[in-house]
Amino acid sequence: MTKMLTRRVLLGLFTVIIVSIIIFTGVELLPGDACTAFLDRDAFGKLLENCRENLGLNRSGLVRYFEWAFAALQGDLGVAANGTTSIGELVGDRLKNSLFLAGCSLSVGIPLAIFLGVLTGLKRDKPIDIIVSTGAIFAMTIPEFVSATILILIFSVWLGWLPGIVVVSASAPVQDFFPEIILPVVVLAMVMTAHMLRMVRSSVIDVMSGDYVQMATLKGVPYWRLVFQHALPNALLPAINVVALTIAWLVGGVVVIEVVFNYPGLGRMMIDAISDRDLPVVQAIALIVGSAYVGVNLAADMLTMFLNPRLRTMYVK
Image (cartoon, rainbow, N blue to C red):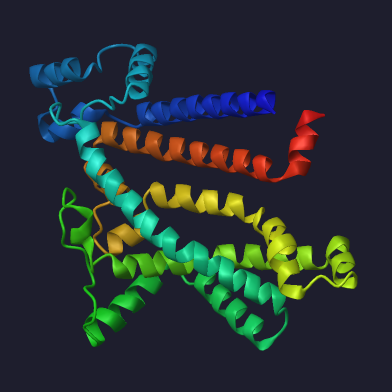
């Protein structure tokens, strides 16, 4: 078990290193650099040379990669293209806001997805299953910006119940985001609930048709005891990886939702940095998002192995 966990952690670290190389190389291959983007039409002569010297762009790419990577390991993401603003300070508030949005969405989406997934799985082909499954398919197929626009139109323009955009600054405390954050949370919870619901429903149907469930039924085990003590724990195991991908998706910043609702999160910051050609900020955010995906998936794999005795036995062998 320890050997397997060590191997998974090393594989995760290797993946992060590969991701960092791809990010750094991709930014290096772009035409121009942070100084030419920042100085724009003044990018020539002594001014350009001083800018590149201040940002360390006059050294080789290999040296700059190792300096950037080791600094990132220590929590130093460097400075923005203007040469003075710390990227860590810029990203800190935006990351906090994205985590807050993710936490609110998950606290609504996960319980709802589990409840509806179990309900539709147990009531397979019944009216409740058909209605909920049809609604989930619609939620999955409708683009997020369309759902967001419809909700803004209904609840902000027509009814006037909720604000349609977030007008709070990125550095504001989280309590100031209410009630502006309600509509973004509803849109994100609707999307993630649809995906997780279908996964939980399929797992419940597979588990309830298993031989051990039928044997327990023949032995007279009460139905709801059978569901909660035997079927439900096994049915929820496959949903762990889906939840992990959803968490990483949310932590990385849901770009479309943040742009539509003007939410000051990591995804919106990425769009602004790309528009301003602030390449150091783009590079730092891409590294954070990539590391989040790797870390969350690694945690999900370990949790799945810990909860599933068959996987532990397989790796022990």
